[in-house]
Length: 390
Ligand code: KIV
Ligand code: ZN
Image (cartoon, rainbow, N blue to C red; front, side, top):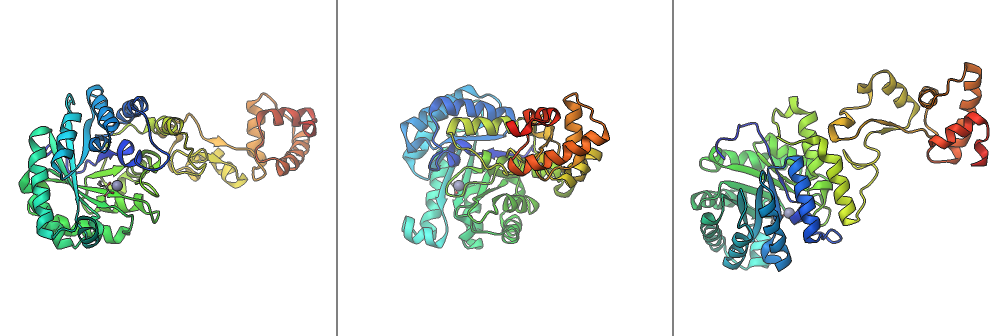
């Protein structure tokens, strides 16, 4: 891990674990395998394939993925419990590169009501879990569940112990999506400064979207030194979901001069990966979803279309080609202008003179008031003058 350049951010995908855990998103083994190889094509660095102790099915799926994928590090989740760790280790057998991800709750609420354990007992359990996992995989990640509601000095204490026990990736989950960009920035800064030899390990961020800030919070953590982002395709995950993989990848790419870090991902695969997930789960995404929604590269308003026809940069901060879409869609509707209509008619082989165009434009606006979108057949009808028969 120490050979990773300081401004490289690792992408840890948890679509098949935290994502699949959410109601409505469960996938069978075959689908998980298809999704996993698509995510490998996207170039994710680590793929959390499941939580093997949760069910025999999960364990088999993790094993199938571990044996099939050769570039991505395959990760399996485990509580700091002996049986979980053994099951995770077995599921990872055959993996080219493997990681066991052990976690335990650290916040006062979880300590008292979930675990009924003291701070010291929890540190002991973490050390035991990491020590047991270490010989069974290439690397161990340790997560302090509900870290954002944990006392920062206790986080430092448990992370120092985790490093001593052999963990090389320390994850700081905002388990309940409670933090804000400023707060998480301050916490990562504090951890960077106070964890012993913090430069020898990778600090990781894992944000949930309960307040709609998962992507913003992940990027703030990166600004303060996080070098791994845990995220899921289409933002799926527990409750409101995890930080969306496509959003963090594109934010770091589009705003590279600002963040001054990079990922080694192939963003051109993002749309295909997103579509595959919706197909497999049967769960559609909103039209206006950032990066992969149907409207993400569509322009309907006349003012925007006019600008776009002159120079794409006026209303486009990234190219559709960058996410694997062949071209921007200038949608014809009631907000569209004459320039976009004329362009589309020309593309269809029509070249009406100005007087004809005046008439067509008036009829186009009347038709657009009645319909949400004007399609190719409507344009042919407008030219023929029989648009009201459709
Ligand atoms: O949100 C969370 O705390 C988790 C941990 C298991 C990392 O998903
Ligand atoms: Zn989570």
